[in-house]
Length: 115
Image 1 (tube, rainbow, N blue to C red):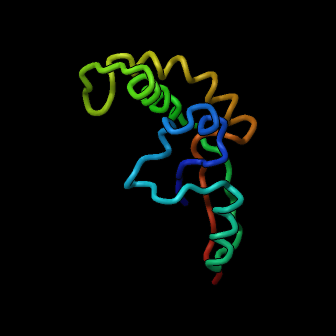
Image 2: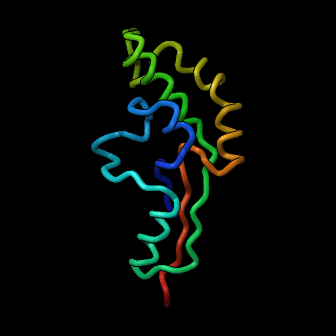
């Protein structure tokens, strides 16, 4: 079981280079749900399930946009701007819709190793 950014998300399409899934060096490969399932299948696993995860990762993407594109330079506390809590509230409805249509910014993966 694991969780990782979804390259096929609506969020990535909207935020582009400011998408928080581009979090190097933690995420060196960006995969779509289909590409991830294929990779896991080729590794010999079965019962593969890859689906959108409920996550508020879009708040970080919105923050990245504000800081990078709009040149907003506040003092950060643990990597978060003073408006981060507000961004969480603002993106929550978007994240729910994105998840409901299977295009959320994060995806959960589960697979079983054959016995």
